[in-house]
Length: 261
Ligand code: AMP
Image 1: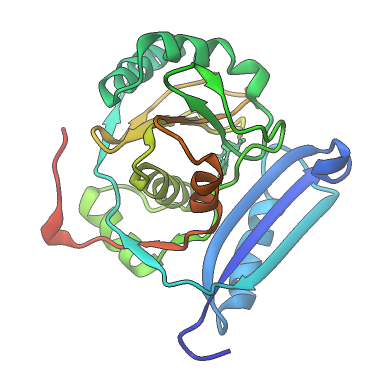
Image 2: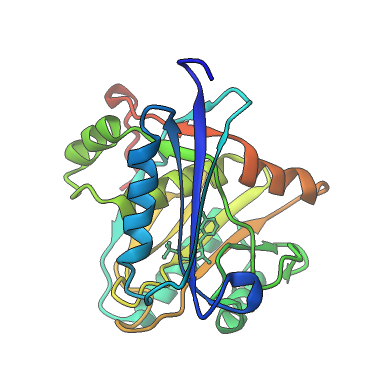
């Protein structure tokens, strides 16, 4: 261990047994820590698991491992907010944004038809925009994006600049969306939380940035959704390897602000 080393820290929690034994997914989390901060990092993830409104976990796993690759720095996607009055309006805006991002209409319709059967996963599903078919073969596990973070001091500056209340939820989602959208094969992402108390979701992509939509599901609904729309994936294995293993830090610089709406 040397002073400049970083560690990937991951957590998953479930109820009624471990995920692989059919337990219900409660919470997951991933961050990057220095060695000296590991105790605090583990505590942040433990707190997240023990206070999730999806339920009380009876299985929890937290692990850390040394990151043995250079960490790529990425600028956060520019952020926009779409205020909507109803779930119907929210879904309609999400579909229009996905289309602007480059997802064909037919594929969007297919994805929305299959959302119910794909909820309850602990990871994301990969949807091919040409065949309109799910291609990740990960069943109820999905693909969990990992090895990513944003230093709190820099995130707080970003939040302050954008007049957004800083929260772990926004930070985690924007970090994930920034990492995923960076890959050339990613066309767009659609997400809403599986937390029954959180109804804001987003659509993200290189062209459209990170577009929050204030209502994508009804309050109390435990079904979440995370779909990565992908194109030209000749090497699925390498794509999943990028999502799971490539370490990234999001870093914001005030002078590089891009306005999108
Ligand atoms: P959340 O936004 O954390 O409430 O998660 C909503 C859904 O997104 C979850 O049910 C998972 O299916 C998926 N998800 C959450 N975190 C990740 C991640 N790190 N990588 C891939 N999918 C995730």
